Length: 347
Ligand code: ATP
Image (cartoon, rainbow, N blue to C red; front, side, top):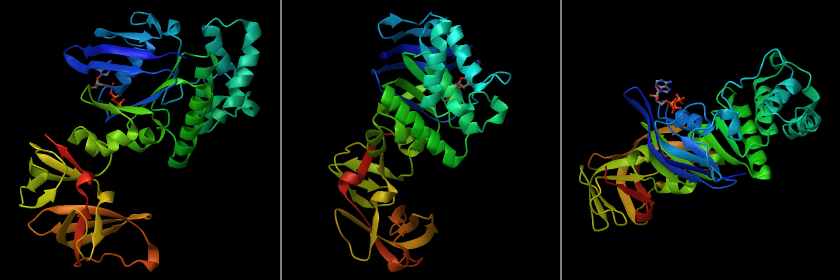
């Protein structure tokens, strides 16, 4: 395995900038997820690492080797695509063998390698089937085996789970994660699914309009988003507009909220699961209001509260079932949360 250094890469298609000044060091054995909405530039960045497209500017190194101008097959990367990209006229074993042939692995070594990677993804018994005789999850396992058979220095995955249904998505995701850990693979995983990224990434790079917004561990990005885009992309957040000064944030509607620091802030965010609803005020912030509506989401309830003064807040509370009184529309409540649950933003 090897580290990957991405140094100030940029990609333009004509006048359009798809990726702008992207820099990132990916450590040996680390899994980094590139996360962002459609069109943000994550696939383009991955394809530049793989070598399918050349950057307009900047440099990419794998280990100590500058690979910026090297063709795909000389980069020691294994890639998995959203649509599996298996050859329909080849069996499972032949699909895996093809990658080995392309990389000029001697014939004598191929069989052992094929057996090993097919075992790894639990596809040995189906080695003589054709792709059309496999489920989506099985086809993706074969694609993973094909990528790993060449023992690449870097493992690249481009939305590998998008074509699978919800349950299978979690299953294959966990398999990929376990393999990545066991083999210590330096991995880049592109996705637009925040839950997927949070679940498997050591670090995530959140992208928007070709620009990296923030890089960090899942909990840092979720708890301390650098800006409103990251906050919003990684889940729901109550956002107040106003002004921050001396540990107090004054909302435009006149609400005073105790928050740490945040001098000069223009927005204040609080995650809904940090807001508890109580009959009596409690803790650092207790904002009086009336329950507007309650949404049943299975394991949680999402309760909308109209605060005195005009602001609104959403609280997510665990579904306590029949033993716990549910907040009913019209009930008077206090939306309670602590100053350190608040995140200040300056944009
Ligand atoms: P998606 O999840 O939809 O694949 P993405 O974040 O991976 O999105 P990219 O595919 O990297 O986004 O595209 C980034 C931007 O570059 C988009 O605006 C896209 O239209 C543009 N783009 C990508 N490839 C080309 C190309 N070959 N020619 C022109 N523009 C392109």
